[in-house]
Length: 245
Image (cartoon, rainbow, N blue to C red; front, side, top):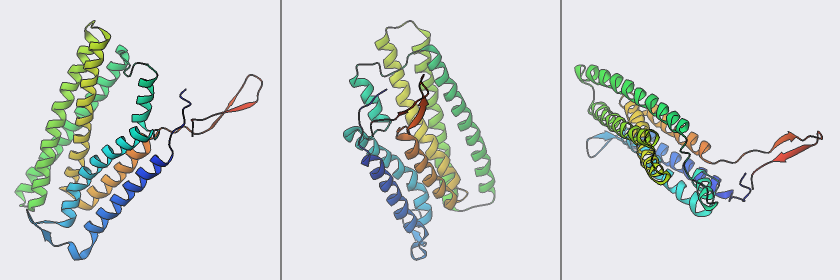
C-alpha cells in the first residue's frame, strides 16, 4: 500500500472550480434577461449552454489532471505516477484483464449504437414535424459524435486484441495497450458529449442538469482517498488502515 501523503486541498479546490463553473453556466442559462436568441445560429442562451457545458467539463477535467499531477492530490493521475516512481509496470498486461476491458468496450459500442438508432429515429420524427433549428442541429451533432465514438472504440479494441493475441515483448504489448487506452478515453469523452447533446435536442434543461451531475460523479470517483477502516488482528485488537492524509 502506498503510504505517501497526498495534498488534500487539491480535491477541494477542484470541487470549488466545478461548482463555480456550474453556477456561472446556470446563471447564464436561466436568467430571463438573456433568454433571447444569441448569434450566430439564433440559438437561445440555454441552448448554447447545453452545447458548451460538456465541453467546459472536458477542459475542467484536464485542469484537474494537471493539478493532481503537479501537486500530487491523490487522484488517479497521481496514483499512477506513484506506481511509475516505484519502478512498477503501469499496465496490467494479463490476458484476462485485457479481455475484460474489451468486454466493457463491446458493451459501450452496443450502447452507442442503440442510442444512435434511437436518436436517428427521433430526428426523423422531428424533421417530419418541422421542429426548431437547434433540435435538428443538436441531433445531427450528437449522431456524428456517436459514430466517431464507435469508430474509436473499434480501433481501441483492435489494439487490445493484438496485445492479447500475439506473443510480443512486454514493451510492445504495453505500447499497444497505451494506444488502446488513449482511443478508449477519447471515445468515452465523445460518448458522454454525444449523450448530453442528444438529450439537449429534446430538452436543454435536462441536458444541462445531466452534465452537472456527470461532472460531480466524475470528480467523486477520480480522487482515491480510502476511509479509515477497522480490521481485527489475530489478537482481536482493531487496527486502522488509512492513506497518507
